[in-house]
Length: 165
Image 1: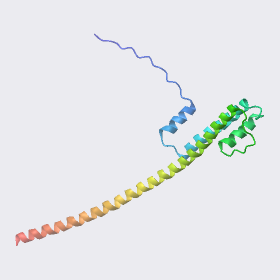
Image 2: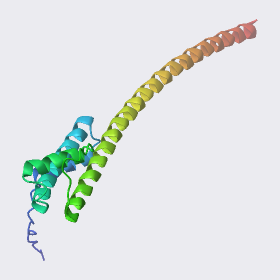
Image 3: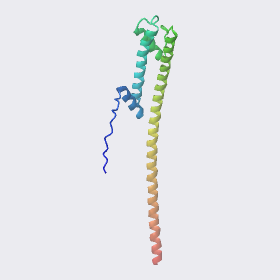
Image 4: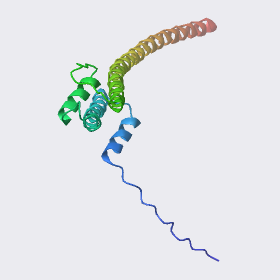
């Protein structure tokens, strides 16, 4: 008796949006300095725009328009903090704390990316130097073995000659 299988219903895969696709690609392979900088600049830009709009909405008395809010967000995220505009409301200060932390994280990540690039480059150069050293050592060892092989051939010849005499 043959049983026929019915094909399983296929569940459509949700489409990944461009940001998810870029983040997935970024997380899969080691990032280049250019890719890391792109992610950091994009994130920082989004934080400045979002925080500028949010602070305008939450503390409209202090921030007369969105551009003043973005100016405050930019100087806060870059840790410059001129102080010409500051949030008065507690919720505005919470937004400010978030923006400050993002700015500090930005500097830390930039430093880490640059450092890891230097470390990776030094590791690659060290690996190449080790491979070159191994090649030189291998060549010396092979030359020495060839020399010993020649000496053994000479000794064998001498032993044969002695046995004939």
